[in-house]
Amino acid sequence: MKTTSIKAYGTISPEADLKSLVINRREVTPEDVEIDILFCGVCHSDLHFARNDWGMTQYPVVPGHEIVGKVVTTGAAVTKFKKGDIVAVGCLVDSCRTCANCKNDVEQYCPEWVGTYGGYDKYLDTTTHGGYSETIVVSASYVLRVPENLDLAGIAPVLCAGITTWSPLRHYKVAKDSKVAVVGLGGLGHMAIKLAHALGAHVTLFSRSENKIKDAKRLGANQVIISKDSTQMESVAGHFDVIIDTVPYAHDLNPYINTLNTNGTLVVIGYLGPLDPALVTVPLIMGRKAVAGSLIGGIKETQELLDFCGKHNITSDIERINIQDINTAYQRMLKSDVKYRFVIDMKSLKE
Ligand SMILES: NC(=O)c1ccc[n+]([C@@H]2O[C@H](COP(=O)([O-])OP(=O)(O)OC[C@H]3O[C@@H](n4cnc5c(N)ncnc54)[C@H](OP(=O)(O)O)[C@@H]3O)[C@@H](O)[C@H]2O)c1
Ligand SMILES: [Zn+2]
Ligand SMILES: [Zn+2]
Image (spheres, rainbow, N blue to C red):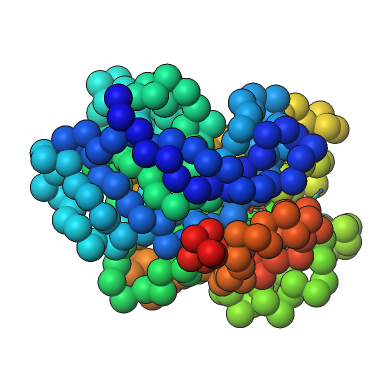
């Protein structure tokens, strides 16, 4: 298959900084769309992947799965998009299309789903490369329409931070007056607050940091509980229907379980790995409480969210950066020093 060489940014080892690289994109097949990337959000998963935190990274890695861009070429069979359309690509670019999960629009749970980066690229028999790059070629079925009324840089984080929090909010039927808590005010956390608030829920933020209280309320939280303060934690015992936990590293879930109502569910979306300390099952059994997980969202649900954001005028709060600033951005993300998502202006890659 023919390929085109393009500029990208990525890393060749867990210790190395991200730097300029050249990668190949496949030729545009009849069902593909070629996209000129305008903006790409910076997810904490990009950092985990670049540093091989999950032990599965194949190098070189080119992260980025919050992609907004303009269609430059469409394959002969593509009817959904035309040249010049503003479109988006999120965390997955393919799946088997035939299994029960694919048929039920939850492609993210397809055993053969293909991540936008770090997945298996069957066309080139290599690893997929993400949005820290000039262009991307994606099957039209995995490309999304972007509402025209929204800021294009601000919408990029909806493609991961947005859908990853939206999917469990919808699955657990969060609606008007639901009692929702969000653990951690970062990229995912700030979208969780905005979206739960837009659904009419009463929203609480659990944060380690007092200096996030004002922002959390501006984003839509009704209250903030400082998780290090046991008196504050006790004040919400037995309170929540749903907790969305976005913390990226191993942490103690037990204090949060105590704040769930009977039948309440804590959904872990941030941390991948064994719990430390272990989960105490007594309150789960005594209160029919659940601990669950959730992975991004399917294409149909992501389009629903983009349309919801268009209708409710929701975008992410972002700090726009140039690609040359990406290593500093990673350092700042590790210190939770970002309000609340870095988005790369991909023009900077062309410079
Ligand atoms: N399930 C999925 O499909 C999915 C999708 C995307 C991302 N993720 C994962 O979700 C996690 C969050 O991503 P993100 O982009 O939102 O990250 P982020 O912007 O860095 O935010 C994480 C937040 O968690 C809190 N936090 C950080 N370190 C902590 C620690 N050691 N203990 C307690 N709290 C801590 C901080 O909030 P406070 O300062 O307010 O405490 C921080 O702002 C990452 O691990 C990412 O890989 C999962
Ligand atoms: Zn992500
Ligand atoms: Zn499938």
